[in-house]
Length: 188
Image (tube, rainbow, N blue to C red; front, side, top):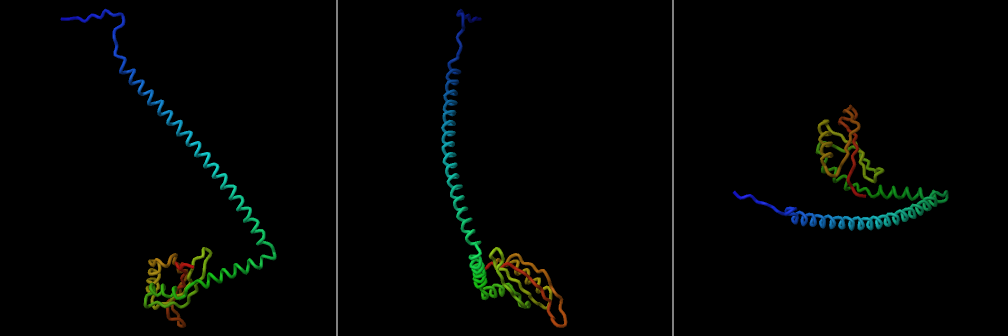
């Protein structure tokens, strides 16, 4: 049997791979820190540009708001109030004139069952500038009125159908009558 004898005061160790690995990791970490620092500096530059853009937009918004306030003050003067009221009135007339009766009747005719009659109809423009149709329909049976309501609800041209009231037949009026309101998808 052979016994190894080491006569050196400090035996040989294999430290080179550990030192090379530690050096490689430290170089990688220094590169990562440099990359992060460059990203931070780039981000700060972009934030400064964004702050400058926001400041410019805020100043232009303040300027436009001041101009709007000045124009509103001119419109609120007593001598201009009459012109403003007349303009609003004319705009409302133009909206009403823009409603196409022919198109309303054509679209209602597609959804109207043959056993239902339109008794009264009144289209108007609501506050959202949409056409709303208020109408009274009559039919011999309530099922026909319900069928008409279902046809309106399934049509893409009509929305928000509501039937707030209905009347049973009487001696003076032999039809079931229902008053309904529906939003119409006609463009003004």
